[in-house]
Length: 444
Image 1 (cartoon, rainbow, N blue to C red):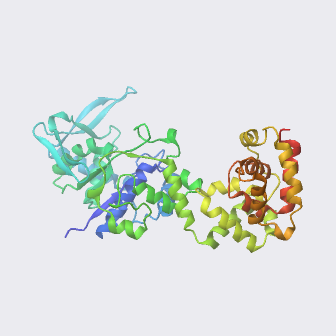
Image 2: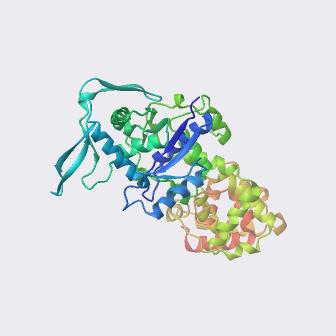
Image 3: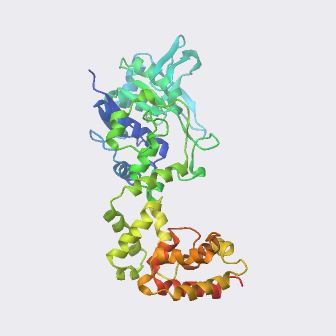
């Protein structure tokens, strides 16, 4: 059987869009599933944007996601002489011609045009979208070499696919119109036509193409925000494909074994940031305890919170047990952990207004200072503190006590279990913060 060869051919700009990397993921999985080759081609003809730094961003992104490729990186600019030689071949065979054109800036030059057939139908069987057809007469001739002598995308793309012996082209359905043109180029060159699979677009909740206006749209942004590569890979895979059952969290081995192009959805895939955050949280739960503890310590040290050094390992282990199951994105730790290591933590003004400005809160906090102050240091545990507050509520719900306490000791309206938080903070810190909140923030 013919060896399957697919390629990811981005134009590096310094940012990698999630739509492009999803195409890379599908190509990679298809190659791994079939035992074929996954190739990386850098379409670097835009010299202003395709800088070494921009290309390195692409490499870093692929390495972070585990998208390894099987042959040396193919740089499109290095194949330019071959592109131009093929243009001459098309001119000689009558499939191309030269014409004088005036550009928008008023400059006149000679452009090489590809001569489209004027009769018949161009058609192909798309692995994802099904049978596709278009009348040849509806596609005008198109340029393949600019007046400055540089090859245009259509020519370069097809020649590179021929030279890399690409058998399957998996890309976004915004390229469907290009595919009709490219098929004619392959035929004019007497080259085998690859099989095509066009992926539906990723859209926002309004059904429009997902962009930076809707939230993070580039892989690097998710990395910076504390998303795990395994979670982003898994989520992007499910934007247009599923394993055929209810499973959503898949190992890389399961993805490779189950992935089939024929099961890719035709309809557009809606990007749901909340679903991605949930999935990221599921992957965070799977981080080994010691590895997560090391990440906590690294972030605390990076924030310059030196007081953390005084805490013992048992304290850290308890913190991990409380924090890890509740963490959706690693960067959330940068704000949620601050209150455990310094009294200089941010105060959420909205939480203060909602929880501490109600009548009677000042008296409640001062009463708690007295009651908590009577608890022996050895009894300062989450269960004992919860029992104390539950007794105050007399079965009517602990909200009037729990919410003000949380804001008073952490500055936030949400976080880990309150009584576990108090155990971690310790008696002395808790009493000082309750008293300060009563004096400075709470309503009478």
